[in-house]
Image (cartoon, rainbow, N blue to C red; front, side, top):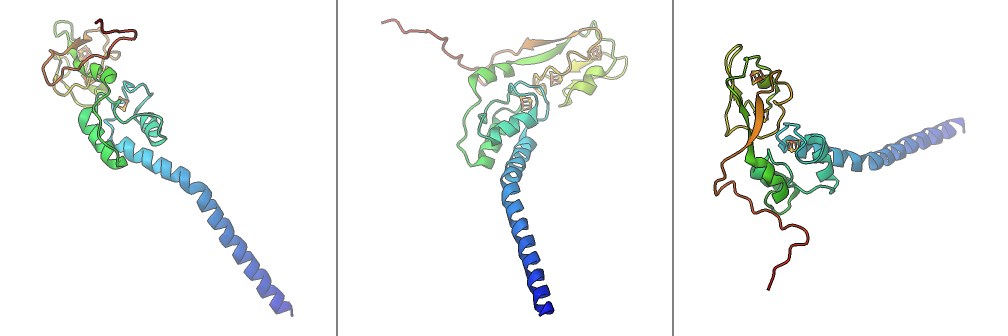
Length: 186
Ligand code: SF4
Ligand code: SF4
Ligand code: SF4
């Protein structure tokens, strides 16, 4: 009799354990799924942490996309390539860069070579290796590589870096958004 009770008790404990395991998995899975998705989106972003998407960095932007709160076309440094990768990951249609954000792609950093003291602080700050130079030598920016993240500006001790507009070419030209209240006169 005692053995039967012991077996029943053991079975009850095993059943409870299995039930607890299944319940906790069900509760945790959705958040894990979201976290996994945001990590995968984040891995596609340029990691310049420039904030030009209006989020504090790439990870917060990725999380907002995974929650469906942000669109996939707000990262100017990532450009079209990043949008294509994210749309393919999410199985969504590609859409071009939001024109308001695309305007920010039309700038690059420019170093005043006469003022540069060659401290290399800007090189260390640039996340995409768009600055070349050596210690105590003049530095310069490779325009094609610059993503306009502005991360090199504040570390410069002599304020010799500024953002300047890129020459407008047909490939970089973006139609500006109509202003509020704009009306077509007839
Ligand atoms: S704009 Fe792009 S690179 Fe900059 S923080 Fe946002 S996601 Fe990252
Ligand atoms: S040169 Fe400056 S603005 Fe351009 S990508 Fe590097 S840190 Fe950003
Ligand atoms: S941080 Fe300024 S001074 Fe230093 S190397 Fe860069 S551009 Fe030159």
